[in-house]
Length: 494
Image 1 (tube, helix red, strand yellow):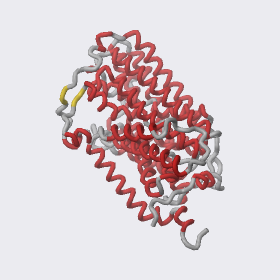
Image 2 (image 1 turned 180 degrees about the horizontal axis):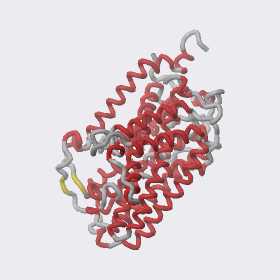
Image 3 (image 1 turned 30 degrees about the vertical axis):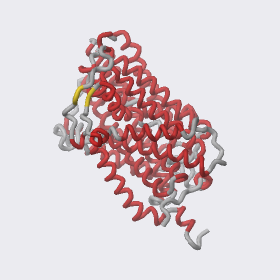
Image 4 (image 1 turned 135 degrees about the vertical axis):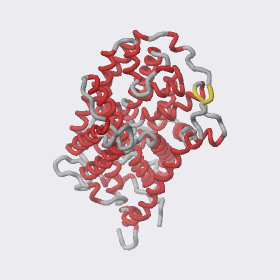
């Protein structure tokens, strides 16, 4: 049993041309940039800014967003080389299969399933809250029973969250080009609202709200036990708020705001010119959103004292605080519309990872069946849409949201290691984009990812390891016996 058997880059590319497993190449570089912006600009801007400023970083919250963007940028340079060299669906899963081996690839694929499915469910629940708030503003009040999961505020099922997931799933089945057009419209609305916040909010900035820009650090006794960051548990550091330690601790939270740029890599097989378009999509979307995040967080921190910023809707509530509720309503509309795109792209990426793993034999083959008319992996899309709908409708996800971060960081880490391995084992491969300053950039990416990971709570590590154990059991029970690479290498097979 060879757990580290690899699937060659040439075989990965050849598999994309198999009848019945061929995805349509409909996406341009602009489509990919818009996809990236669509999934990144969402929860981070509309929700996290207030929470992180109030509890961790103070007015210096923009520094946390910028530092988190740097971590992502290091990984993006590694992703860009891989995605342009191996333009195949599956993202980090496919890249790991070509470099680290089958079992590590399975682990990262299983990890991506957790990241993307749970991320879509979390954002769907967030969208439901904004949707209910918007209806309340219009005088329409939905009962708590259909807005919350069981055991939460008198809830029975989160109907709006379920409805959103099912509608988005239907769009994805109809075709990636239709999905990209819907996403483009949503992104225009969302970015327009973000620019409104930056421009209009600048007129209400008060200089005293920036003082002190980096508040003095102070102990945070409410964070203890398994809820404390792993780094502080290991080194016995007392959890603090504010100061530079607070800014660094905030990176582990605001990192969620950037989750999504790697989704661009999962659509590699559907790009018209992947060697050119994928690096543009990955790096372009990250740079644009990093600028928007830094600008918005700076403006909002200047509009309202950081200790008074709202946890649920900091942008809208900041405008309410300065007496402009009309702007607040516009922002609520932007959040409702904008989070639709986030769910759409997360589900798109999730179904493509399922598709790639199924095509390799590590999951049942019917999961990679392509719809004869729409050219999409419709069965995997429908199944995962159903799973995400159940998660969003019936399970409180506040604590599990941190699993999304650790899963993404783990994927980034493996991709960075994979670039170093592939440079050594396959220096002959044509690379339309080459990560600069190798091995420095990949090593820095690994270290940066590890730094953010150890700033996540200890309980998040427990849950992540439990998910990985479940994945290992499935691999040894099914995947290793049905692996196409393994079967091809078996005696008596060509």
